[in-house]
View 1 (cartoon, rainbow, N blue to C red):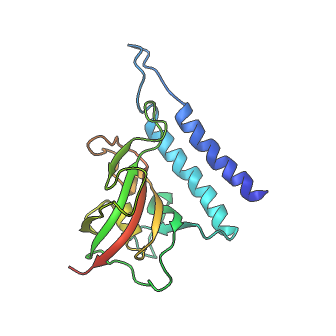
View 2: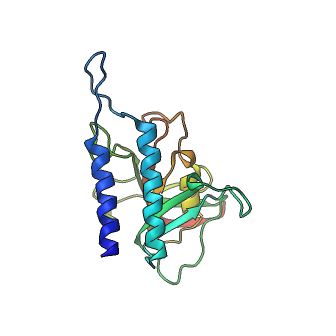
View 3: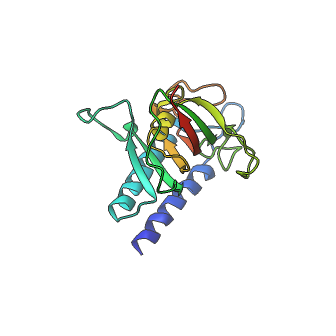
Length: 200
């Protein structure tokens, strides 16, 4: 019953996000990202609370991982963690994870929270066409340290064969200013599959 309640609340948060729209009083145009900063901050804080309860109840398909950039003695907030839903686990024989300086081979897809025109969230970047097909998808290669902090944090905790859905607060993504078609204050949601990694 407790697990059903948490799943219900998580579902309701997503529904509430894309059900909310706002119009400009001046010209009647519908805003793409109304109240974006507050919506993203509230979403991530609420998701953090729900995930911590799931972890405390013994669930192993969710993780909360501190950013690689902060040490044990640092003052930490929700913005210093990524949240991970494990989609599939690496084989038990895989025990190593990439270092910050390693090169990686990755399948990935990134999207935003739901907005006015994108009820499933704008898919802003991807290495594969949906639905994901491992037989035809070609992994992308880059440095584990050459991406936003949230993505780099995930990679440094993954093993070959792991596939995770990763939620990153805007502080570990593109910050207050955003990037290209990603507005500032955006929570980033990535589907990441680590195929391989090696030292440069």
